[in-house]
Image (cartoon, rainbow, N blue to C red; front, side, top):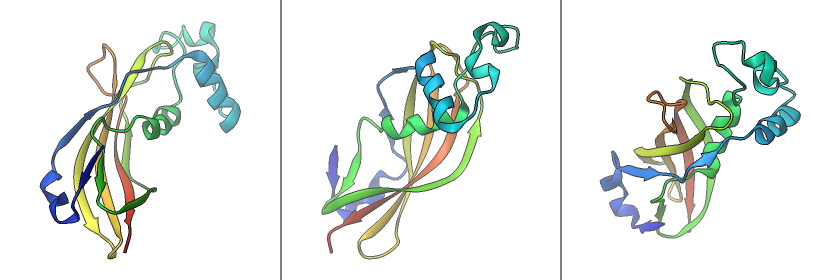
Amino acid sequence: MSTIPISEIQNYVGANLGASEWMKIDQARVNSFAEVTGDFQFIHLDEEAASKTPFGGTIAHGFLTLSLVASMGPQKSLVLEGWQMGVNYGSDKVRFLYPVRVGKRIRAHWKLLSVIAKTETNYLFKYEVSVEIEGVETPALIYESLLMQVVAA
């Protein structure tokens, strides 16, 4: 984690912040997500039926993959001096480009797109996040993550 003076944060806009560690997507995680969300579509849970689809087997829910981004922060996190907390502010766009087969590993790549001072203590960070699937050229998803950093007054 790098602590950055507020006066210097704009120097990091456009910077690639690196990739997270690899995370394996297993069937137990997919099953748990189905239980929590009520999304029991066979392509996520039934290996035999899913093997007969173009996916060739069970796949992770797109929203499971998206939700895992929160735990796959960049290797080099940028934190403003005086940081008190960070808050998920939402996203601008999400595109699910390629299914994640159960058994594959994924990792997230982070790029800082912008930082906007919303108030004297609130700074909105916009990141481009892409989720790589090991051995697959097309990313699982690309989205713009919005995170608010709150600093001491």
